[in-house]
Length: 523
Ligand code: MV4
Image (tube, rainbow, N blue to C red; front, side, top):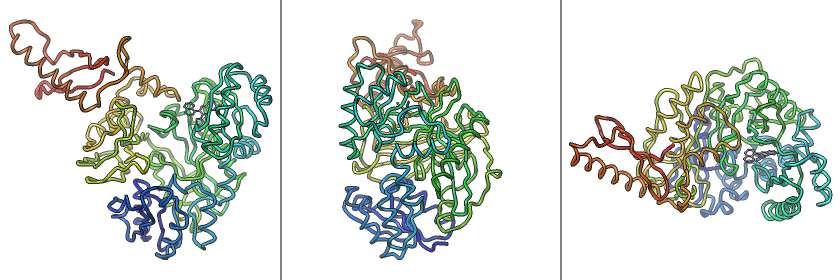
């Protein structure tokens, strides 16, 4: 077993990996940029090495600096976390060449699954349904035209070197194809240095469901069930849950076995995730892509299966067998995770950097917060603005939602804007509560909760200004009702609706006793 592991990452995932090291009596070594000198993961590690200036390219993406830090601290292994160098085959190769252990799959497998076309080819070879479309990159627009006619519109143009929805184009009719083809090509070239595209039949209103798999170096490949990831905003997952509200054991087995077949076919080792699109009505599923890293949303699988995925990654990298067989895996209860971002939901989710002046993290029955910040933390513009993930476990989905609601109401982060108010509304939304999820949920939710009056300008004041204005309105209203006490005027206990820059806001008293109005957007 390793004595010392270097974590080539920052924020909440670095803290998460440090915790697994602590549980295993392994010395955690942190790396940090000059912007992270006071970061939580630096404070929690035994040793910490500054690897460069704030910009990621000069620090967390700086392979030479990370390897030098590992050498300087005599770390035997490197855990890449997710993002940054986690799926960089050159990095995984360089780690091996430096006689260190990369905690993850081999560079070759990482490379194979990193190309969307070679991943589709591997899936098809393993007998796993892929979305109908081209397996090889398109050689010309003429070929795209011919294939689109053959599969029938709508079709999806995708970048071979892409993923996560970047460079993806939905084409609904033949007259749109040429411009979509040309823009997708130039976007793919700009984003990935590779203009190659492939084309698929578009699956309409799909669910995005992924399967967690785990393989050791002794031939054992196991699936740990699914995660529902359909609640996304601009291809960023927002809320993930395990199991999927579909909760269909036969679908879980069929998708799980398909994911295991792919992992076996490519000689996968470590934690991996196979992403599928699921057509809700027919329950047909199609391979999308495979992620060769631990995912952000791994906690919901851990909460339901009781398995520590980071611990298993470390023991498997050290050559041990998986601590469980397929028949040992049990799914107990339901878990839902919200990704808490330093973004302002009322300002088009623009990043909201700044200093956290007050932090109250929820706890209690069934609550887990994987955070990477503390009071005083500087949320900087250099890195992804995700500051924590809040997960709630319950015996069933209803209890998980109730606990998540309680925890979100308890959560308090001052000094920056966050997506917490956005989640507080989602967990009260009927469509969400009913579990009718597909990749269009957020768009529909946003339209429902931000009805734009016909003549309304689309700009709304920043959230705290809006809240202050609404509270002022409520106080004015309550003063009015006092002065007109003789008249039969509605009190605050009966909801009153106020228009604020074209948005309809509902004022209701939080409780008769407090008679302190809460100002929330109308759901
Ligand atoms: C699709 C699709 C429908 N049909 N491919 C999105 C990113 C990457 N994981 C692949 N994705 C999709 N590929 C076909 N043939 C739907 C998605 C998709 C999606 C599309 C639009 C808006 C949000 C989405 C969320 C998840 C998946």
